[in-house]
Image (cartoon, rainbow, N blue to C red; front, side):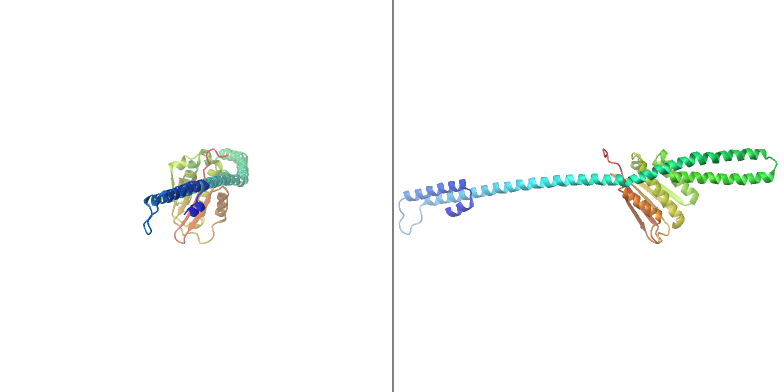
Length: 311
């Protein structure tokens, strides 16, 4: 038993075990010899039992300390791995934001160029068309009584009005003026104009939380463009009678769904929608088109909200 104890416990425990073993041997030597065939003395048995219990206790104590040491090492390793993972996730988020900013830079440049062209058209061509309209009005007054000339001037004025409307549509296409009054106003105007021109029932449902999101020029313009392209495709291809638009807000994103009850999308999405899908993806958002023949089409997207404190 002593040899086994020496092989399984540390030196201090082995010394205690040796002392207990020597005490047991001394007690056994001091006891009077037992007759042949008699059982061992009670004291020797007790000492042997005490020694065995001591060995077991020391072995358990040593194993517990060893397991505690291993557990502490595992905890330290786990904490280190968690720290490394947190650092990696933070670096990944920073890289994603940087990539989104880099991808959005050309789009910002294009948007700036669109706004410049829109201002030039509005200021120069718009002013010239307005001047021409005033000149026609004066010419009509000077041509009173000349019915043939008045009729021709009225036709010219109608064409001029159509030119002014086309110019305004082009300006709005280049840079949505409605966004200056906020995203909600721009979307409502777009829906109202779509219903008026197409005759298709169009409903907009917007959550209050979505309308309270902080303005973001690039994000708002993208939502407006996607809605504009979606409604344009519905008019051209869907043969729909109803359109439902839902604007919502999740924890860190704005979502929009455009759903119609038309014939569905028989082939690949239109080029304009594919371009929008690429722009949304580059901005860190998600874009999805679900369509079945005879069951309409649902277009959905989500765009991230700017994080507080993000650089």
